[in-house]
Every structure is written in C-alpha cells, then in structure tokens.
Image (cartoon, rainbow, N blue to C red; front, side, top):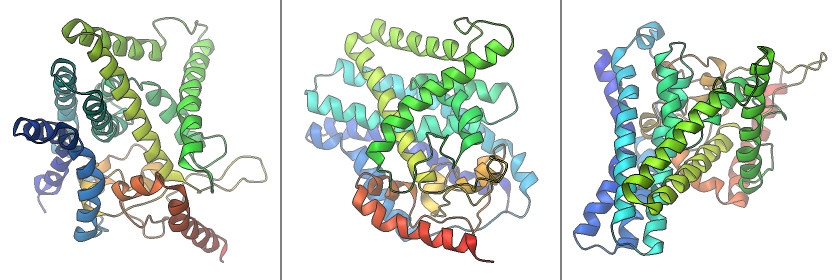
Length: 358
C-alpha cells in the first residue's frame, strides 16, 4: 500500500473542526440556535459511535514500522492541525462574542468548542510533545497554550509516563473510582505535579522556579497573551469564552485519561519499584473510525510501551486489555458510573485473572 493512501484516512482528524461552522450554517438557514449548537456534541457522541459500530475494528499492523515512522505526509497532517485549530478557535470565539445569542446558546457553543479542542488540539499536542525534535514539541506547546493546559506538556512526559497504572499517577483511575471523583483529582493534581516537576528541575540547576526559564511560565504566559488578544479584538465575552473553552478541553482530556487507564495496575516488586510498563497496562481500542479521527490514539497500550513511536506506527495487541467500543462511545459511558462499572469492571477482573495464569 502506498504511504499516502495509508495516511489519508487520518485526514478525518480534521472533521471535528467542521462541526461548529456547520452549526453556524444551520443557524443561518433558520434552525433554532439552541438546537443547532448541539450538533457537534450529537455528531461526536451520537453519530460517531453508531458509525464506529458499523465500520468495525481494524487490527491490522503495518509490516514496516520504520517506513511509517519516517512518513512525512503524516507529520505534515499533525503540523497542519496547529494553524487549522488556531484559526478555528479565533473564528469560534469571534462568532460567540459578537453575534447575539442567548446565554444557553452561547454556553452550548463554548462547550462544543472546548470538546473539539480536547479532541483536535490536545490529542495532536499529545503526539507532538513526545517527539525528540525541537520543532514538534514547540508546536505541541502552542496547541496546549491555546487551551490553557500547558502543564500537560510537563506532567504527561515526566509524571504520567513514569507512574502510569500506579497509585502515584493522578491520571490513572483506580478500580471502582467514578469519573466524578477522578476529575478533580486529575485536574488539580496534574497541575500541581507539573509545577513541582518543573520547579525541581530548575532547583537541580541552581535556578529559581519563578523565572522565565520555567517552561510553564512561558506557556501560560502565551495563554495570557492569547486571552488578552481575544479581549482587545472582541471584548470581555471573548476572554470568558477563551477561558471556559480551555477548561472544557482539559476536562475532555482527563475523561479520555480515565478511559485509557481505568482499573489497570502494575505489579509492585519486592524492591518497592513497579514492573516495567508494557502494552498490558493501558486499554486498547481497535475501532476503525475513531482511531482514524484520533490519529490512532486508541492504540494506547502500545503508546505507553513505546512512547516515542509515532501514532500512525502504533501497533494493535490482542492480548492488551480491550475496550468494548471506541472512545466516543466510552466517553458517554463514563458519564454514567453505574453503567460504566457494569460494562468495564468485568473486563478488568477477566484481564487480571488471565495475568495470573501460568
């Protein structure tokens, strides 16, 4: 298969950026505004799960990982997401800040914008910050600054990937923990841990934490500059929209973290350390459509086993813990804790039983 044909399916990652413009067109055509702004959420969490079910799973692994790793066309897609998202963000904030809307319509618009940011901006940033080049992590930081969640760049790389599937990781939900108990712990804990990690890095070099060399100061300073730009261009409503969409994007990310690691634990060794991270310590999902829309993030088990591997080269492992549906479906399920536990907990018990078999 030619590389461009393989990569072309990841163009679906840009579909979420078309959802709010579609809502605007629907309102211009006479649809009730409150109904029109629900379209992005209905599409992502209604139509996509149905399409996921219809299109089935993709368990195919490419025979040549090195060729995929070096595929420029995939890199260009992730780089293109940066200007595409920033233009979408600016247009969306301008739209909600300058057009007459009820508070309900404006609120639903901003929620939809935040969810799209969590899906498109943060997911792409997640791919970029893992790379060893200087250019791509900068792009990832820019995306994270646009949703005011730059701490993810520090905590995810130096915290989450070190402590995943252990009690020390606030992004790994324990068995029986509801989403609503998990979210405050993840949002506050990850922000605090990011600061501690960066301050510790600077102290180790004999420098103070409250200086420009602190990576978080730079990225959050950029967030403040973006907020100020929105205010100067479109007023205080635009600043409020920018802040709230960032908060919703962060919540969206942490719900996905909940899905990716719920109930999975690494064994603690006699030394007190935990066993090495493998593809057994994160949930895998093979649904074809959502994997294409997320640059193949759902092969998350392999991502934690090989963090620098590019998304398009991630591999499916059938012996990884398997989610029963794609992220779009599991996102909705996580919002209903009794239903979530009824569906997911038996899979965890079954997986743990397999792990102890000879």
